Amino acid sequence: MEIEITHPAVNEYLHALLPERDPILQEMETLARERNIPIIGPVVGRILYQLVRLAKAKTIFEMGSAIGYSTLWIARGAGEGSAVYYTDSDPENARQAERFLERSGVRDRVQILIGDAIELLDQTPGTFDVIFNDVDKEQYPQVFHKAIPRLRKGGLFLADNVLWSGRVVQPPQDQNAATRGIVEFNRLIYSSPELYPTILPIRDGFAVCEKVK
Ligand SMILES: C[S@@+](CC[C@H](N)C(=O)[O-])C[C@H]1O[C@@H](n2cnc3c(N)ncnc32)[C@H](O)[C@@H]1O
Image (tube, rainbow, N blue to C red; front, side, top):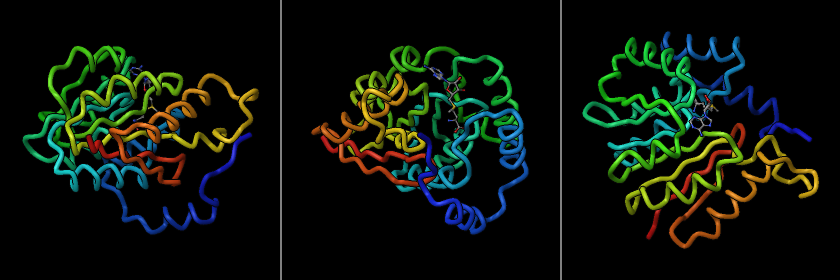
C-alpha cells in the first residue's frame, strides 16, 4: 500500500506557488531526481528554513544529510555564526554535499561528519537548538531515545517521512521493519511528556516537536 498524503493536484498547486529556487538548490533538485536521491524537496525545505529562523536556532544537528539539500536550507535559516552538523554514512554523498555547500557560501558554518549519525551524535558534545532526523526508518525509535536528551529545553526535534506514504496505517502484520520503525517513533513522540508534537501532513509527513521539559 502506498498513497500520496496530499492529493496530487493539491501537491502540484503547492509547488506552483513556490518562488523559483536559486541555481544551486535547483541543481541539487535535478541531481536528486536523476539519481533517485530522496530529499525533502522545496515545500518541506521552506518549513525547515522557517522553523530554524523562528526558533533562532544556532546549533543544529542533522541526521541523514545525503547531498546536503536539507543542510543548505538549514544553514541559510541559521545564518552566519551558526554551527550546523551534516551527517551521512556515505562518503560520496559527503563529497557532493561539501561542493554544494562551498559554492553556496555556507561551508564555514557546516561541520561535515561521515559515519553513523547516531554514533556521531554521541561523539559530538553539547546540546542543540534543533535536531533533524532523516536516517533509515528502522532507526527512528533509537534516534528518538538518543536525540531528546541532547536537545535544549524549547528546542525543536524534527523528522521527515513520518507518514511513510500512508504505510503507517497498514495492519501490523503487513508492516515491514521501516514502517514499524516509523509507527513506533510516532507513538514515542506523542507519548513523551518532554515533547509537544505535531505531524504536518505535507509531502510524506513532517513531525515538529517542541521540547517542553
Ligand atoms: C532521506 S536521505 C536524506 C535526505 C536529506 N535529509 C535531504 O532532505 O536533503 C537519507 C540519508 O541518510 C543516510 N543515512 C541513513 N541512515 C543513516 C545513519 N544511521 N547514519 C548516517 N547516515 C544515514 C543515507 O546515506 C541517505 O543519504
